[in-house]
Structure formats: C-alpha cells, structure tokens
Length: 501
Ligand code: XIL
Image (tube, rainbow, N blue to C red; front, side, top):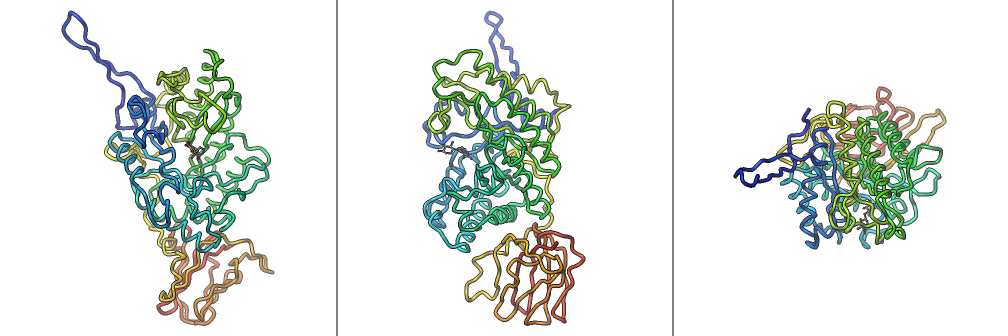
C-alpha cells in the first residue's frame, strides 16, 4: 500500500552499448521505503549546509534518502532571537524552502531549552519578565513558520540527570526564574500559535528503561499529568545519542512507546547516532560496523512495529560532519562514512524496512503526507476551537492604560482547603477593586455582583459560561482539571488559571 504520494526512488539508467537504447530501473531508498510505510525518516541539515561549506554529495544524499528534516542549530533560541525582539529567520526559511521543494516534513528544534540561549535571556531574573520573553518568542517563531513546521520540540532536556525524578535546575534560566510552570505554558502558547503543529517534549537518556527513578518514568508521569490537564502535548522525542555497547536501548524504546500509547502520545526517535569510543577510531573493522548496523536495525524494527512511532531522525548524514567527535568523545556514529560511502548500517535499515511489509506497518498520522507542501499531517488534531483564552493570557497586558489584568499561566500548586478541595494557588487575583475567590466549587466575585463568568479548558475550548447578578457561580458541573476562568465586570476582564479537583 502506498501511503505517501512522493515517489523518491533513485532512477538509474544504463545505456546498453551496441543496442543503442537505455534501460532504467528504480532503486529503493530509505525514503521510498519509509514513505510506502507512512513513516518519516530524516536527518539534520548540518550547520555546514547552512554556511555553504559542505560537499555537494551531502544534499544529494539528504534529499534522496530522507523525507524529514531538522536544523542542527539554526532554529534554536540563540539563532532565532539573538537580541531581544529581533528575530532572525533567514536560515530557517532556507531550510523550509528546501523541505518544500523536496517534499519533506520539517521538525522545529527547539523552543524552550536551557542550552544555546542568548546572554540577554540568561541574565533575566524576574519571573514575569521571563514569562513574557518566552511567550513572545514562541508567538513569533511558531507563528512565523505556522503551517510549515509540522512539529516542534517545545521543551528540550528539562529533566535533571540525578535519577531522582525532578526538573533540571542547574544551568536552566527557565526553571530557576520561572519554575516548572514554564513547561506547561510553553506548550499552551505553542498550540495557540499553530494549532495544527505536533508538539513534543524531547530529551536524552530516556532510552534507558522505565525503572524506578528513571528519566523515562518521569516523562511518562508528566505526560499523564499534561494529558489530564489538557496541556496540548502530542509527542515525545527520544534523542537516542547512544554507544555501540548500549544493546538494551532498542527494547527500552519499545517499552517507552507502549507506555506513551496509553496516553495517545507519539514517540519519535529524534537525534539518533550510535558512536564508538573515540579512541577506537583507528581499530574499527568490518565486525564493528556490522554490530553498529545490527543496532541501527533493531531501532528501525521497533520503530516500524510500534504503531505510535512516526519519525526516525538521525543526527547527521556523514561521519565527516558529526557533533560526536568534537563534543562527545565518540566517533563514526552515522550511516555514511567520511567519504559518503554507505556503511553496513545503511543496508541494515533498508533490510529492516523491507522485512516489514507496508501492509503491516501502521502510521500514527491519520492522513498521508501531502505532496505540494512540506509533508505534514494536518488531520489528526481538533482545531475547531482557537485557543483564544490562552492567547489572550499575556503578561504584557499589565500596562497602566490597559484595563485588563491578566495573570500569566501558572501551574496551580495543590492548595488544599479544609474540605479537601483544591483551589486557586494564590487565593485571589486583584483587578482594581474586584477579586475572584474559589472555595470548593463556588467562585465568588468579590467587589461586584454583576459579572459574566467563562471557563475554558487548556486548549481554549469554552466549558462554562454564565452571567450572575449575585456575585458568585457554582462550578460543580465541570470535571476535574486545569482551567482558565475569565470574569468580566463591565469592560474589565480578570483571568486566572485554576485547578478544579
Ligand atoms: C548539538 C549540535 O549538533 C552542535 O553543533 C551544537 O554545538 C550543540 O548542539 N541534543 C540536542 C541538540 O537537542 O540540539 C544537540 O545538537 C545535541 C544534543
């Protein structure tokens, strides 16, 4: 079954000497086999590609073998907003144009990450100011590539490495200045900026199993919480920068995919490379490369067999251009060698694809890729209701001339009342002389008796609306979860995020 419209088999022709005519045949590529199976296989465009300092074979191989693309560095925060409010889209635009003309899916990497953040952001110590910066960045960057970037790494590497189930604090301006709520807010804002984009949490070392204290277990717990609260996450990315000795990792990825399937979340392999220790570079032989191929193949087997996996992205094309040697103390981790010769890993991936007939491979993307634009899925999401509540919830609206007082999206902490109900984290919000106060499921408007009360879920869908003349409303009919409450008194609006439990 042909699931994708793009045929990218390499056509090769040979002139039969003496007979005076040519015969042509189609050779399967990673791309053509993946497309037939409704899946994406991709590789980064290295920074050298953006700087026009890469060999011509690179692009030829890239567009022939892959149908998905991501920038190595050029869509990160420091690249897209090097100075406050000054956005730089040229390189990203070039990649999007390349993807469009070659009918490839674009991943956007990455919006909120502690690394590769410009100095002006790292220096911010004020929570409201940094929330405003993050929101403005997401609004602009996601908005700029709306409909062109199919999927964003909304948050990258936010979990610490301590095996103690916690968020990364050290070195993260986001966590230190804002707290964990920066993650929830980033997802909500990204969804508001492009409701059709897939939104991922991406991290490394989540291919190490779901054991006690594991990063992967923590991710699954958070996905559960996000889903329960309507935070619009749709995918998790496992980076998978591993070593040749990490033989258990493919099956760990399978376990993670199955755990995420419970929550209807896709698992993508986003940055695969399988390196050898750098010191061994001169002693590697055929059996080493065969072993590397075997490991690559196992990842592809898992990828094709798990129905909620969609993208298989490799962090590079050729060993001639890889971050492993310079930054990781590893080497030779990709599927083409330094001379652009396909390694056994390439053949292993082809073999795995062929061993999984298209009729047996499920795609998490409900529609096939489109032919005319970047190959992004556009049908899987409920996009009928714009996330207006969240969009309006800006921190910039605190200027004196604005009559609207809006709170930022904060993660309500579990403030438990005597009756066991959980209410607004900080009790009340002030709008000149009007406040709202939640006790149990009764919302009181203190300071006004006539008010309109609207409640929205975290995707901006209205779940409740009432006009009161007695200064309070009963929210018992709403199910447990996170919501935004909007109270309108005359022309003034007051908004708070609340947890109803
Ligand atoms: C790496 C790039 O490959 C390098 O060029 C850069 O100097 C540092 O970042 N996890 C990620 C990627 O999410 O963005 C990193 O990319 C590799 C690890």
